[in-house]
Image 1 (cartoon, rainbow, N blue to C red):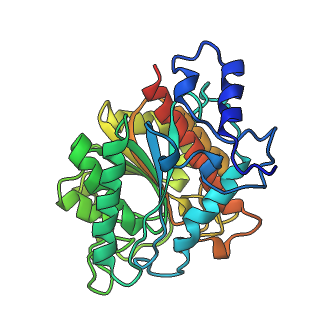
Image 2 (tube, rainbow, N blue to C red):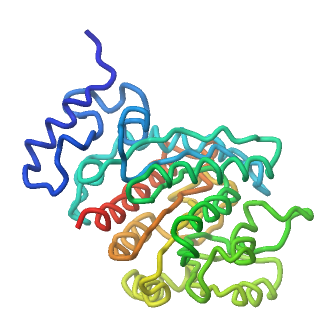
Length: 341
């Protein structure tokens, strides 16, 4: 008989490997066992974990945001969530850097995609906030991870997070500031979410930071206004000069013990590491640098996160989607270390 999902195998493997885990194995449904059912087969939930409908309770929900109507250059990020899931088949249970098993030490589920209106940014943003609020309400830890999708969607996600956690510190990895005012007189786009977030009181004062920004901007005033919104900037060139550890130290100094929302635009990576994105900028971070930075942030109070702007049509050999799924894995590891203490 063919078997698409064998969740009992996933749980049985955990009981044998982790008998002293603080979370009872009977309460956790992990990924399909890749040593029993090949990773290239079966349905592509994120890392082949169960869906929300298959598990009664969960700690972290992964939500897809297939939307790119707010992009200003190359479209295609609406296909990001499905391809991030596809590439996540390669993930394995044990994270040796963070010393945890995020899919077994806590319950992670794939909540599917939100059916966002591709013809109305206003309706899509409202719908995204509603669905994100439902996931946060259902999560035992009140945490979620969103995969996208253009950066417009971070605004409704921050609105949903504020209802649960209050204003947050924003740790923003991106080639661009995303604090511009409008594009073609439109206030809600992928280049404006964090200006709107500041105006709406979603962010804590003087607690937010951009990492990896680079390239030309519209005017010097852009930097002045960004500083006025309470952001600090660590440019891509600064990462090269300072090194990963000093960058991590500066991020931690900035956010302190505040609740943190961490947002990654995949274009923070150099196009040689992530060609599949809408507004690529040369001179970016390496995937190794970004992964090391996330691991260095393991002790922050991460309440939710997103990985955005993955546009698979411009990708090569899954470089971008593999990077995105690996970043998601590290973010889940950080959450796991907070939830399971």
